[in-house]
Amino acid sequence: MHYDAQKDACYPFRYTGKGGNANRFLIERQCMRNCSKRGEKLFPTDERQGCYLPKLVGSCASNYRRYYYSPEDKECKSFLWSGCEGNGNRFLSMSWCNATCHNADENSGDSGVPVGIIVGVVFGLIGAVIIIVVIVIAVKKKKYVNGHAKKHFEEIQAPGGGQRKPEREKSSEKSQQHSVCMDCNSYSTFCYRCDEFVVNDTKLGHVQRVREHLQSLENSVSNTDRQRKRKLSDSSSPDSKLKKDSDGTVAQCATGLRNLGNTCFMNAILQSLRSLVEEFRKTLCSLWQGSQTAFSPDALFYVIWKIMPSFRNGTSTIVTSVFGGVLQNEVYCLICGTESRKFDPFLDLSLDIPSQFRIKTTKDQEPRPTCTLNDCLRSFTDLEELDETELYMCHKCKKRQKSTKKFWIQKLPTVLCLHLKRFHWTAFLRNKIDTYVEFPMCGLDMKSYLLEPENSLPEKCLYDLAAVVVHHGSGIGSGHYTAYGLHEGRWYHFNDSTVTLVSEEAVLKAKAYILFYTERSDQESPAKL
Image (cartoon, one colour):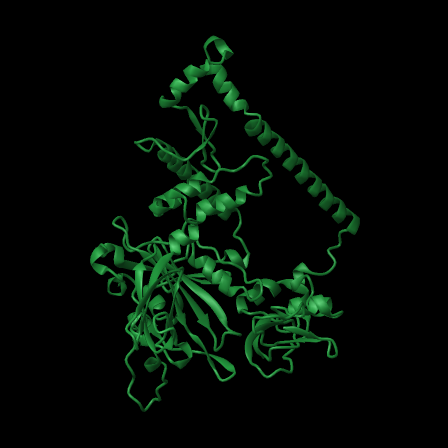
């Protein structure tokens, strides 16, 4: 969006990706609030105030399905927005509209409480929080920075009640058993004798057994608290309500993500990538707890270590270790016969939907064969003759020549991310390919696409579906993203703040945009993400 000062409004435009200036915004709300004096009036800071603004369709030529709140009918309704000249009474989804505007009358207006009392209470609460944070930081600093626990340990261990052992005795004890303690919040293991956090375990796995025991205790306590809170009062928050499936089963242990304005794609990806969630959550939360001591993410490291053994050498990042694979790109010169090979790392594979499956059929025509995921993979790896615009620079011929190109997969990743190219340019428009692509739920065999299939174990080539991202709508500039995710053998549909338990049949009928497959291991099948 860009701001037109003469019309005092924001309008969409197509950005080429190069150059530009600061008059470029992702959404109309951001554009108007930054540039127009009417910004606060049209897009109030409190979204609930926007519920009482009139519905504005705008004067542009597009048609986007949006939702607005009708104060007269006290419900959310759909309308077609033109793409410009709107206001805050416009929502991407019905659930977002209901969550923002439902009971807005009860939450707005004069509360009857003097402003001075409200301000006093707020500042009082802020002061109390600051005092608590300072106390926590001071306590943690004394415990970890000053090393009081280690000092008490040394006093007990040293002969004569506090006399430290000679250095040669301490060095001889390096090979003996060391006493350790564990942080019950992060499950980090601290060795007193080494005076540092450690990640190694005993041969019998004692540290991990203690870690799992503490985790089970924490889960049981949290479940008890959750049940107690549920008995006291049912939450009325729309984010905490989970819809039921056809047989009345509630989708448990699944929480939606509220759409913050064109963030449905981010929400769908976050819901799809839920491996390591618990340890990753604890690691991120610990970074903002006010402690002046460095946090040891060894619990997260242990989980990654367990999933991805190659991560132990410390040469890879989490992303490349989990999603990273290697392609071999072979280019063959048709003039001199020179063959060039190049290895390219990848984090995902972008697959074209073959053109023969894109043709729409009428009711009178016979239905065409269904496009499968293997059709897309074969199209990606098949031998291709490069056209005139992609002539290969042959080092032997010293000029650009006609050539062929072929991809092989040299190394498969642990999590295989497959992106189906559903958007393409035609003239000046970017259209969506709405072709249904059939994909397997279990046992996607990638062996035939490998460079050296004979050197790969059969089970290392099998992948099971873990998550699906779906785009709803007709174009890239509009529409909505949702995700299907597998958790403990059950499939959930994540639609921003709404989470629904669904069947496998519903997942298989989805027109996938991104597919996440996990490598099948000996211990679990199908894999769980």
